[in-house]
Image (cartoon, rainbow, N blue to C red; front, side, top):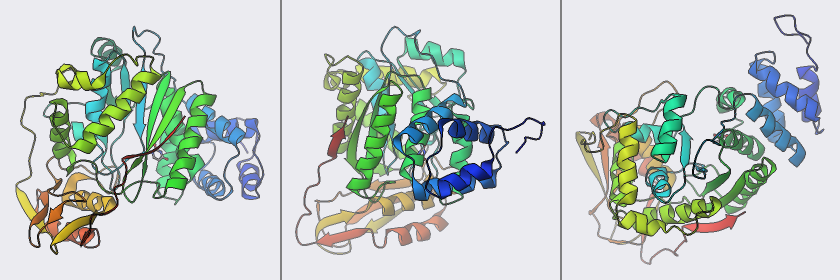
Length: 433
Ligand code: URA
């Protein structure tokens, strides 16, 4: 086939699709070509959609997946962080409800002597995006120039910002296509999508938080483990020291889901308080990141206690125009959800709370939509707590009271009260790497 500009193409997209459709292995040259040709528009969206569906069903062998990921990295720039005077270490979460861990974690790890470049995204669907959360801070901006990024990373130690258009552009296109063609939940496609961006960010070390449970991409432990093992292997293939933790996402993390609500909770953690599970996961991931960066001598619990992490947070927010002392926006409208019976709260489902927060205005249905900074859910009880019928369990926050109805519908099957406490589920379920 030939591109519009008259260029002779090395392969035919139809031949590549057929080869994968029929269960064959693609050659390195075919993979390099198809990713490059798709990025420059010589492979049509419908052809890539067919190939993504063939990969969804047939999978990719380890060699193919490694090459596919590498081709996606080579579709854009790979950041060079060799100018840094401290080791760089990155973190990625596969996304969960109430997952605000990046907010206290990045400044905490920076306060312990590593550099944390976090190129993040906005949320789509029921899991919130880190940038949406930070944008609830008055004045804070997600986009920074290359020069600002480098200066902030060296001087402050942590940058959380929007990824530039040149970071794995093949993934940007392919992820949008997968989103509308039913091909998101494929382990090789998820692993290559996440790892191409993370490897392109240039850190020598990476810690992955792979969520398991109703509020996660991977609802069961086996598929989450397979995803984690696949990503750890891809990191290793690319020379990035990679470790993955599998962590529970059957119930929301902490006591808030929603943009400004989660920032306030992250600041509580940085001030030495905050919910026990958020503190535990922040410290566990911080220790993993510091070990991966060769800074295992630093104790992140000390840096939380003595205010060093908070100092870095304040500098990090200010460096991007934000006012760390400004009041966070709050929604005017509130609605309480009451306990349906007396007993022990046995289940507060992560997906139900995530969808409720989303319907309240904290998330977006389409990429172009805006989000509400104040909307979301505050958890007044957690699984294992004793509750009395009628007692408020959740506080719903919205700018428009018309949103409560749809949020309540999402919660109908997500709350259970029983006679006995649920079995305690550890927060960290496994470690791979
Ligand atoms: N996040 C990504 O960046 N890519 C996926 O495919 C899934 C989640």
